[in-house]
Length: 427
Image: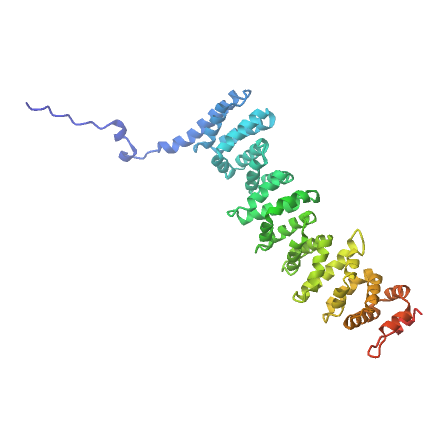
């Protein structure tokens, strides 16, 4: 039996009238539909917000808001409308709403980053405002503040910087700073921003906390001080300058400060100089300086820097002449410095010594009686230097401290020529 023939399959209306079979000018339905979809979603969102305006935030409502925000066919105006509503709830409603909104947005972190990178100012502003107002933990707000600190809009940048400043006023915020700075993948602009804000934001009251946090990772600060980036070196010195007084060993910072005195950038040299002055307020710092000056292998420029800044620092001390008195007790070192062939070393040593000339002169006279012939000759040469280099006021004080005849008898030898006419005016 023959099988019946199958009738031909008719073409559907959809397949015949599709765009591929058009017989004349056509209008893309998709091109018309997308703007209409955006208008439709905008109306839906307005109705949704109005309907739930007096309703406490629930996970279901928040899920709907996030679904709208993540949908690609939602217009910027609609997203701004949703974010504005969430921002208002964070600021005006209960902490429960703020906590739920914050928790939900942190779960959708990729969406948050997308909103913060939007070209629309209102979207970026409301997103930042929501996070800034709802995040209770500093560790959560910290990375958001860093992202927004480089925003193209001035208002967002300023708000983010204020939030960042508030973060670093706390121990948790400083911990976040060091945690971010220790990461290998951190960019140079972010590193400069964090260090710069820390240098501005920390105060002398923060020094103990700062020193404790730096203690485990001084190598990190050493890395900043040796950075090829000028701004990183500068901010590193500004931070270290605050932490130095509470650090129990200034010997770590002093050699670096001396080395930085040769930096090509004037701001870094000045910051390192101020750090050096802070260091030598401690007796350990002075001991390091005197040991450095005694080493013949160290450069003349570094020695001149130490002597010059020590003299300048002595005038600013709460206890004047403390550095001069400390140096005057190092009789052998001073005699060596005054006998140096480098004129600048002699000059700066003498300027410090004038603050304690009586103490050093008495010590020198005692060494004139030393059994060692070389020591006596050194003491005699030093006393001659004092007589010839002193100004009138210093000479007058010297005569009062030591009788003129005694000085003349001690220093005058057949091989020594001293201009005693300078002393005769006081006899």
